[in-house]
Length: 416
Image 1 (cartoon, rainbow, N blue to C red):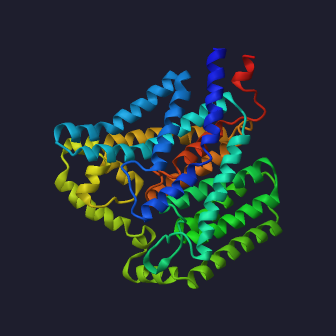
Image 2 (cartoon, rainbow, N blue to C red):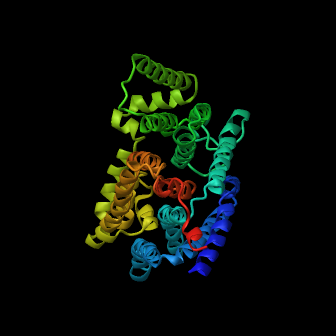
Image 3 (spheres, rainbow, N blue to C red):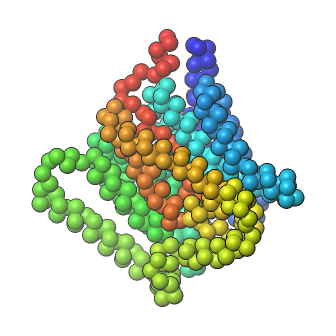
């Protein structure tokens, strides 16, 4: 047992430092893509496959967890295998589906790795360094907009920025996760109000630079949730506190409105507002995509397809686009079976995070609950949240933080 734990600890050490280059490789991948240099598997995808492989090697000491991961993998690949074996699908579909399905699995596998890392090892320094390093790499990308570098979030009007990444909503999701972890750490753990305020304001500015509805409002709502999560509601709330809160929220809303009015994003919003109803505006036309796709799906799918799906690539080929609402894309790709699996996984996560948020020995329980609730809400309004290639490992880490205890000796230390 001691020998196994010794080797596991060495793998954790290697993984900890291999996490640091993740966003740098995603940047390189984005630059290559924008210059029309593409491969079957990108550099960042290959790197993440290596990391995921190491995560699984690390979890060998938990056979039940490996069986769960293997079950998820096989079930999500059933529609792809079916298309390949019985419908003479092209070999390229197999490769494309492996890549697209891995983006859903990366959150699940990362969650289990970090969960059992915290169960056995309470060390946080390297992982905390990775989170802060990643935040500043993301900040560098978004701030490059100010000197005319990077790529726009929306080609129309050169609006917003995504830095050098190939991403849309994924950038907003990544910013929300990283800023939530950092903000909660300084406010709820370290009680450092100045650091909390600095990162809150800075993250808000980064959200404005992204210029998506999620980026601009998401940071504000997450930081409000963090403040409320650690507030002692047993105390009477003074009028001064209420006044400060209302003043702060009003100031932020005014800044957002002024920013929108004085940038090209106002033209974009005005154009869409004049042409679309409120729901379509909020969903960025995704409800229209769903209606169009549903008509195609009804014509193409049979009963088996509704149950097990046809795989993301075949679904995309038939529909010519993804709806970009995660739960709907999951249904069309993996069928009712896929939807039930995701409900089971995220339902269990929600249950665990609620329980951990009420126990003082798990100081990050409330943070995991906040991240989970926000991302599930976002996934119902937009796409590429639960299958984010860029943010996936960070999301899994954010979910697993609920298992980090206060002042707990590691399992490894007990055997020495």
